[in-house]
Length: 324
Ligand SMILES: [Zn+2]
Image 1 (cartoon, rainbow, N blue to C red):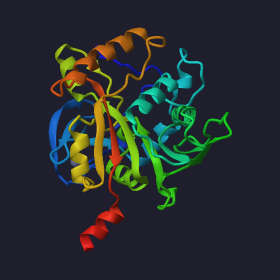
Image 2 (image 1 turned 60 degrees about the vertical axis):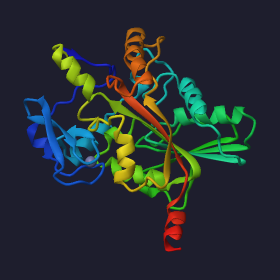
Image 3 (image 1 turned 90 degrees about the vertical axis):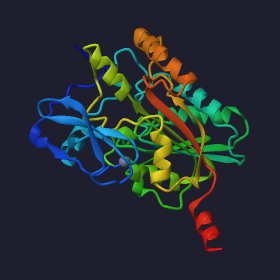
């Protein structure tokens, strides 16, 4: 029996000739560090593997680049879900709910006139726009500037003159001296062949005192549990190629030598993607599974994890300290 919590994705045909073997961890860069886990699928044969260094769970075979690009050209957003009529090009239900959630986590916000937000992989930027509106409602800022980095080339239209949205792609096209007060990478790292590279770039683009928010799937323990019950949980392969445990977010910072720059503000089971209004049973199920994870770190059947870091030192300062 198959179980999927994804409503608007066409099933991808996976052919042997479209796959390449993976032997280097795209997160921490370790070579031949994968430990084979259980079989993921028989034909073509693909196994789950786990990096011995950073702890990321991934697959021993992935789609080659051209094929992956093809998959993303057909990417479906929320506006394809019949139950959602907002037309937003995002994959999260209830953007105001998301904005409130982030506002609660990010305290204090930087004290300055303008807040700059980098929305990495945020579709049309609807989520960061909702956050921008919440920031403006505090009455403490003159303006919010949002840069959306995504395949989608048109960001949503701003209805407020003090909130601007621009689009840029890829991430490396952003000038290195651009700095952002808030960086959002919500449900994006799991899609990237080398998320370690983008993780580092995002840290470099964060201003001192700024925040970085990540949200990604943590489904492998749940997959194994459901298998025992004879149910195959949809891991959304080949779109999702990484599964990050709660400890991965701490380990990757050390593997990438960023522990002097980042401090964890808050982490835990991620905010539920669906609302009771849109998908009642799915939302109830997700909330029930996540609840024990909010109390104890020993509960791993949470489906997704989120973390907020704060940049508490920058690279240049650290280098200068080392020289002195
Ligand atoms: Zn690794």
